[in-house]
Image (tube, rainbow, N blue to C red):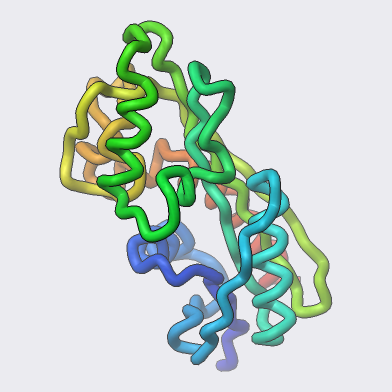
Length: 201
């Protein structure tokens, strides 16, 4: 039986793993850029998460001729006026590692008291057809920024994103629990519903 393919428009291996788990039950075969031999790097020049997700999904859907899913996610820190937001990955400069980005953010927040360290992770998923029809899904998760990294799981800013109701950082959660409560998990649940409907028509 021929399965429709869904291209995951990301080169981030940790993200690919997360999506394979989050989108387990869709009527599509998930394929990656690497598997399709696509090396295009879409310039994430958008000013918003929505714009970046849309840019990536439409460019890669057009190139691959496959239904494509791209996301952009960002950490929005209230004390920094919502920064780094769409610039979360470039926040500490080009070529920075996750650790560099975390340290840079903690330095910027070093004089901010605990109760003002509120933040949210936001994720926007764009699903684009090869001819550029896009559907967007978003999810968010609220927490606090810790003063030092904790936990070995996850990636990005997970080690400093503390979830008061769980008493843990995102990086201290097992993957299944993270996927249930995270911004990406919440956006993916909406994307899953869209993809199921699309696969059944």
